[in-house]
View (tube, rainbow, N blue to C red):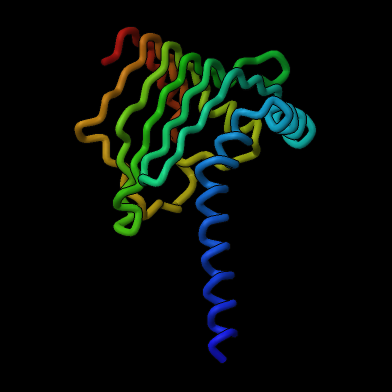
Length: 172
């Protein structure tokens, strides 16, 4: 009986360390791998008929609850119409209080940020958030966050047909 528990304990220990290894080494490798990026780009083209370009993504994980994401460029278009573009993207998120349904944004920024929300949602066949009654239980904490956008353009159509356009520079 002792051998059974010992084997079970060793198996659990191996699975635990395998999960840590996958989170800290394998996942960041996959995010940065050019073959995986190519698969993502081809799958987006095949499934949603959108063109996605991803340049130099990097994911940093560790034994702490902080994840960092950086990329030189992400560009999404459909029928030669730009839907989403970001350059020199930098994000740091803390999952310290994930059990309290709180996600802390430590750092969020980009050199250039462009999004046409309605056309992006339409391209991926997602209902507009205005018509959806589903609310997330998660709270995003921006208090004490470092937020920066050098150039920003956001376009969005509200329920009543009003088109909102935000165009800004040097947001810190």
